[in-house]
Structure formats: C-alpha cells, structure tokens
Amino acid sequence: MSFSIIERFFDSIILIEADIFEDDRGVFMESYHKDAFAALGIHEDFVQENHSISALGVIRGLHFQWNKPMGKLLRVTTGRAHVVEVDIRKDSPTLGKHIHVELSADNAHMLWVPAGFANGFMSMEHGTEMIYKCTAMYNPKAESGIVWNDPSLAIEWPVHEIDTEPILSDKDIQAQTLAEWLSKPESSHFTY
Image (cartoon, rainbow, N blue to C red; front, side, top):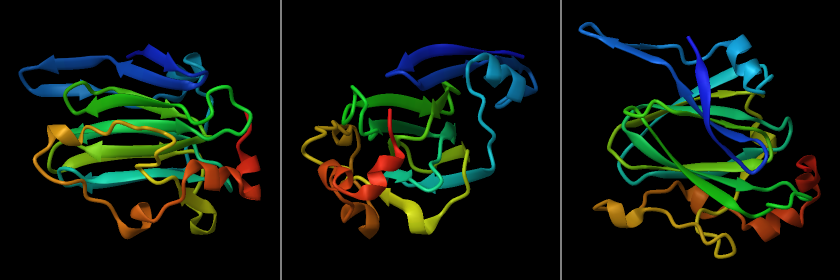
C-alpha cells in the first residue's frame, strides 16, 4: 500500500492519492497509515473523526478552530465536493488566498489541511458524504468561520453547475469576514 502526493498548495496543504485495488469483488484502498503519512511529511496524531452527509448545493464553511488549532484530513466517500481552503495565518505571504480542489468518491483523493486554514466545501451531488480526521477535539467555545461570500476573498463557488440555490446554515450565513477575524486577538493563534 502506498500514498503519493498529487500536488502541494501554499506551503503545507497536500492533495494525496492512495493506491486503489479493484477486482470483480469491488474496490479496496487503505485510507490512512501513520507511517506512510509520516513519509509524506504529515506527522499529526488524529484524535477525532467526523462524517457529514449533505444535500446538493449545501455549502459548509468556511470553518476553523483556534483553541486547540485543528488540522483536517478530508476525503469524500459518496458523491463529490468542491473544497475551498483559505489561508488565515496572520503573517503568511498567502494570507487571504484560497485554493479549490474537487474530492469525490470516484477520484478517492484526500486533502491534508493543517491548522491555519478556514475549510469549506460545496456538495455537488445529493448525499455527498465527507469524512475527516481531526488533530484536535471539537471545542465549541473556540470555533468560528469566515463568511462563504466574503467579497475580499472573491471565491468562485460553482453555483452555476447546480440547479438550486446554495443552502447554508444560519451560523454560516452570519459568519464574519476575514478582516473582522484578523482584528480579533484570537487570530494570533495562527501564525506563519
């Protein structure tokens, strides 16, 4: 079993491909191996795993946690998701920049996102299932988000590809802008 790096983004986000074995019985893949991930430069301990199921057009995010900062290893097991990661590290040369990646059950890619990025995704199919391992336990007192349509970020969500309006939680609709986040003392938890 092995994993390979498809692409690196900024200085630390890694798009990963796993070996997939297919025969007349179906498909098998190893989705995590501590030593193999360490060989890719990912030395994190994962302490929690989350699983979301989203309807077509659901946007979740852009979420992050500052105490304890949380890295995430993302993968889609059913459907497909348009994933967006925004750099929110105060001194980073890529502060406020973002990347787009498609994760799907078909491509079986994984995305390693260390702490310091706001994570979000848009479900591109009904019933999209996202599973992500986390490097910190969820702390509702130290979690926040950046509003999905912050004009300063100019994120191009693929809403033109779906036949419905985006669906967001009230919390995500009312999230702050990146500028508002950077004005808070908590933002110093993420430095480059």
